Image 1 (tube, rainbow over the protein chains, first blue to last red):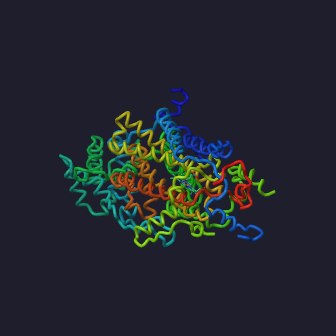
Image 2 (cartoon, rainbow over the protein chains, first blue to last red; image 1 turned 120 degrees about the horizontal axis):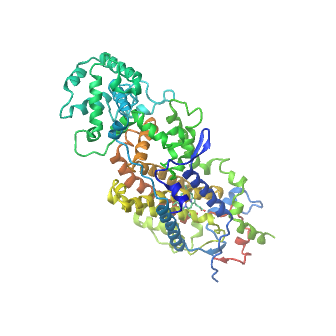
Image 3 (tube, rainbow over the protein chains, first blue to last red; image 1 turned 45 degrees about the vertical axis):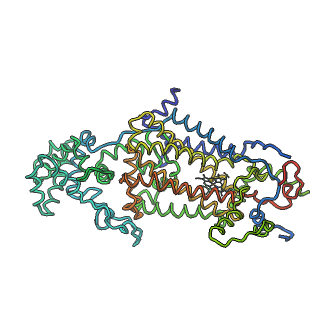
Length: 55
Length: 321
Length: 227
Ligand code: HEM
């Protein structure tokens, strides 16, 4: 396992929390939300393959 | 449909009819198969690399061993009826004015006491009577005591524990605590030997799958909550969304969680009721978006659909000219 | 023009039993070529359309891994390496399920995909979302570890304040087990099935502001096939 992944994935790690004041987010949750936004944006912009044409 | 200008309802009419325009080949079963493979690979990959957390559960035993002082203080509160559980109200007991209400609107009282818990009897006295060598003299003294005596003993002992160094029961000043120190000490021994977990869960029978009493007892102490705080799980830390460690949790509860962080909810005594009702209203609004003017028009005003259907909009002009 | 007029040319069979009427209704609203079509309107050309399928597929993985977990009981995954792996698969299927479902929801919102009589499709979609949240919550309660202990302790307050904590008791593992492995999965499955059938019945919603004069409808678009 890559040391970086094992660091983030370590089950006994206390977890990484980001944010300020009342706004706090756990790193895992933040990644999930960012990936969702990324998927949405990619779905909007990536060209969709054109299907086979049948006469 | 022959009006010279198209009104919105006419355009919706087009959405209502089966499509009679150009088509493209689209293979749903092939899409299903490809999706099964792609999503399956992602899931198996994440499971193998990141895995899932499994923080071991705590028990009354581990609590009594790790923090005996906290355990004894909590047991005293259960005896005296001053713990959070004892003052909770329905569905556990009938404590007056304990429910979360909005004016006269009191859903919490609606169920009545369905899961009755008498903290002194159920969490301390009855478990002690199951011991091989129960502290009989102390139990008799407790049962013979009047309500005022019981309240005075536990209140005095609670104060004495607070004033003792580290809350250590062994270093408590002498005073009139009645049978309370003997009872709580016996319960501490019982818990640290692991007997209390079994007795509270089993409730005199072999099978059990109901942990209500144990969970409430644990929660009345400071130990359990401190562990949760350290793991960022409590409600005022957005903990509702969090899993232990860095594994993502229930991020879809972000809005539910959010309200607990801000006023007026954060300090409201009826925060749970307010937030539940607010989320109910918001969920209904989102469900009924198609009927709500304004909300249903935003997609027209912010034309993200121009991107989604850009090929369509590009080609359609050919037929217009 | 209504759908009724449209299908006037079909051979008229008389339906006089409940069974027959049900068949007639199904044949009219969900003929085989609508249920399992080989083509889609030319505007169905965006990656945003794959997220509904992504949610279905994630649900399949949730069910399969969940069945393996439940066959062994809730304590198994604490002590078995394979059990722990299956538990991880279950967890990540759920994360992907919600991720794909939410992107799907965003997409359908910005397409205003409830237009043209598709409100029930939207409503059943929201139903799937809300029931899934409850199902996931009961799953977190079934972890039988520290996380589930804490969720039971803290989760009870919102349920008690709403008056349902007595019947939906988060600290009663037996009760939650039944909810999580039987009732809620059946509910999610039923709502999703209804949702997908409604999608097929109505066909995919045309673009906002699509008009009869568009090339794709007036027959002047030569780049795609016509039906
Ligand atoms: C369990 C979760 C869900 C599953 C498995 C699911 C599945 C699907 C599938 C396979 C489609 C057709 C393909 C596509 O457009 O992606 C679809 C369409 C649709 N979904 Fe969902 N869906 C779910 C949740 C939702 C939610 C949360 C909403 C919004 C509230 C929603 C609203 C819609 C609408 C309005 C359509 C019709 C789209 C159109 O006519 O273009 N769905 N769904």
